[in-house]
Length: 232
Image (cartoon, rainbow, N blue to C red; front, side, top):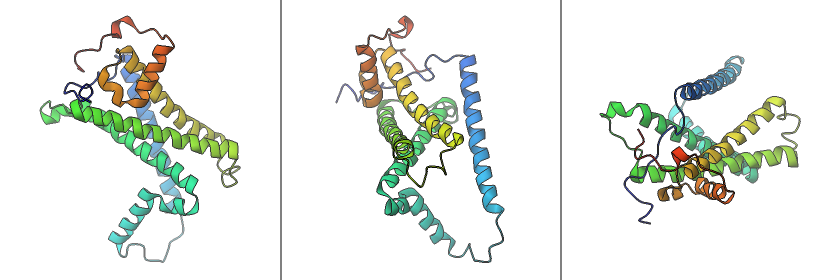
């Protein structure tokens, strides 16, 4: 579609965030990363506190790494045991990894392009492909979390109920779901209040939500009705 594949396709970063809002954003990001790092530390500590194992664990290391990577990336053991669970975990894992990579790309575009003599790449065909992949994999992530919620609270799978249904588990699963759905709602609002640029149709979930906001008669902020000419 010629109307979509336009060279100037891009958008303003951090639309509507200024000063204190940006500081709050980065503070919350720092808190999330700190909590994640602490969780990883606790998990590793549990493994290192075990008794000494006399078995050889470093023999044939390259093939062990390849085998472990294959199991993790394909989720094959989960699929062999439970097709529903395999799909659920794959959607969550690949959706989360894609969103993490997408966020890293934005961070590099915002603060790392000076290393490339100011060269910017988050525009044109790359931007369009990026937006489509983020929406597609983000949708899989939300579907995967929805599948987990359904199994956990409606089906009450016997392997989960009573073992992984504490308050911490509840907060974790619903927070992930809220982040996924909230991200799409924010994307839809961003597309809607910037006048629904034609190239943003590649963000098919966000664009659909933007159309819904229009049908509901949501008012646009006057100062944001015309998309800004540049991202900087």
